[in-house]
Length: 213
Image 1: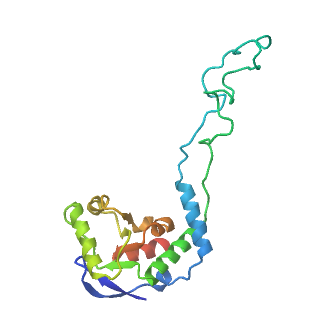
Image 2: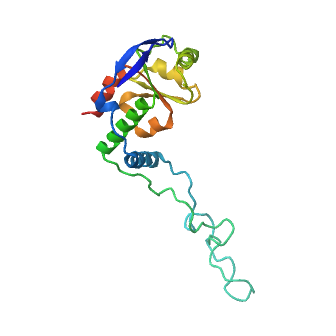
Image 3: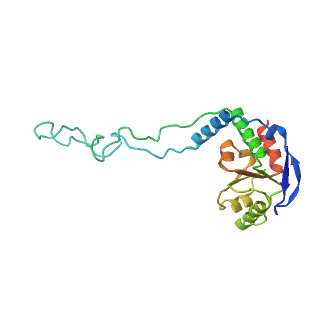
């Protein structure tokens, strides 16, 4: 498969042949769904937590005597039926949502999504991506140049770098709907969270070395 290669000014330079073992994989929607659901579950943070009657304060003694008051009998103000008492069946932070997915399945799903991006013209390839100063407007200018030259380029964008570049990270983090990741950390969930994938040609080599071992 041939895709257009651009420079940072948005000018078309040439065409690059993508390796078929990465960008020509038939998609299996069930596998992609299974992998992305597991990755969402693994990122889930359990925040909601309620206290049981054993954890709330108070209730050291019986609120009133058993008989003779005309009121219902109670043994503790920590009972769930009391205000400020424990919660009977509330959410607990001990619940585990983690799901295990084999490495081969995760990698296969990743390659399927990369293939789909390429086939649907959602992959933007640059000859190189370098910025001298960590200024957001410089990265925003590059993206704007590409949007002016590439037809129908609208929507969120994920930038995949061949290696960590602190300057590029700092210039991209404040741009709305733009994410940035190292190629070795690519995953199915991140790819599906962004419409377009932007990467320098060097990234292809890193993907091949990382996910085709």
